[in-house]
Length: 149
Image (cartoon, rainbow, N blue to C red):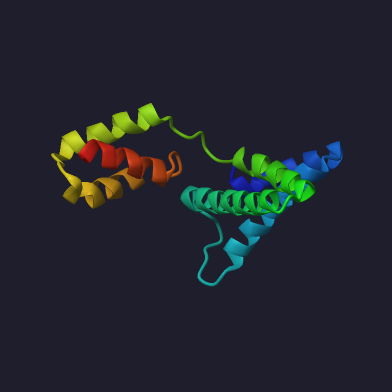
């Protein structure tokens, strides 16, 4: 079942259950999917990587908005963004723990004989592919820096 199909089913359930905030978040996801599919040069279906990237983008937007609303003491809007953030984040794959990330990075470094900060770009390139959607790149970068230092 694709992300779009899951969202459509969940929209129906949210409508029947009269879950307004969840419905708003689901409609935002559906809108983003439709925009991505109808953009110039887009395929008729989205790959799983593209779906994850889209969801991460939506989560980041909600985090940024929530931070601004919190800063401006707009608790009503902050709570709304936070609720949407929680709904959207539920569709992302489970993130790896720092211990799992570190173990995988140690394996990548050992297998390829990387040593020193000069190899950071190579390690990050391989790590980005290995952790696609399962780990935050900032966390991965921090761990790589620590392992190569």
